[in-house]
Length: 285
Image (cartoon, rainbow, N blue to C red):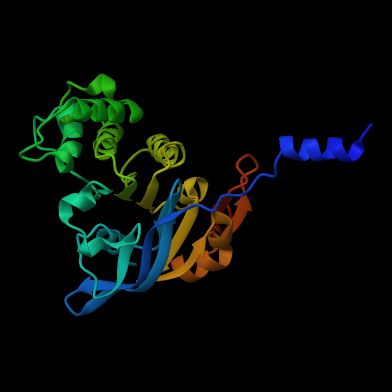
């Protein structure tokens, strides 16, 4: 028996696994933005990777939504830059950017009487020109987006006849139909029941992981952010206090300094993710 030869063959058959570093598609460098002369976001730097769900958390008024709007080119920065695949977001033509980045703002409102299929079809607008009208490719993209968001059965129903969670899925289907590699969502679970919030976040996680898209989401609920975020970015007063995994960022020290919240942080026994438990003052009844 030639042991050396057999070991060599085993190594050739079972090569070492090489860990793949996620690609940072969206990069923000030293970004400051505000309204008039007043800066709301101050010197922020972060990156969002392909195939990951990046979640922005922080107190009300800390600059989360302003940062998201600036990344989406709704607002222009005072200083710094946001780049997508190495190209400046604010220097990219609007239609070209809309083919690569989609934004779902907080509380979107559909025109009265619009059906679900008509709403989702709006996501194909960046792909339409005078020379290129509606095509079979557009129909395919809309059908695939509705299927991914599980709203196909509502296709002919009016959007305003649906529940809050169903409507939100329709809006997500619309941005999926846009077929961009980067998706930005501003508080997509606001005013929804807990079960619906979980369903929406599970859908967004699935989109990021299975479709290899880059998602950046603004959330308020810390435990949901900790449960679903691949990367957590915690902000206070327009600046980033901490960023990294949920284990790195959701700590008692950060909750105290950022939210003025006394809390215990424990590990969920199944997911092994951190869970925030506020400390209740005074005796229990």
